[in-house]
Length: 115
Image (cartoon, rainbow, N blue to C red; front, side):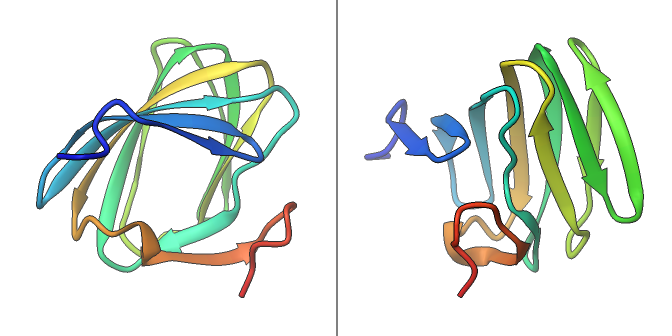
């Protein structure tokens, strides 16, 4: 896999691909305090997020969850979701299904990335 362990910079922080296969991937995300990922969903995959350090706010459907180190959440296919860094935070993301980066449907984005 050519992108393994490559750091991808994002306006909200960065992520590193730890492993990527046809039907799953494992990423380590860093979300800066006060920054947000897009409010988004995915047609072809579900995700499990484990907070490795820091604190985050998660929008999951109509719910707002506050997670800290050692806590986790499952995001279902087609479910709207978003992470906000309440502190500088590291999150382990494991995704299963159709593994395509372009599977993102954005509903809100603080960085002008809605098409």
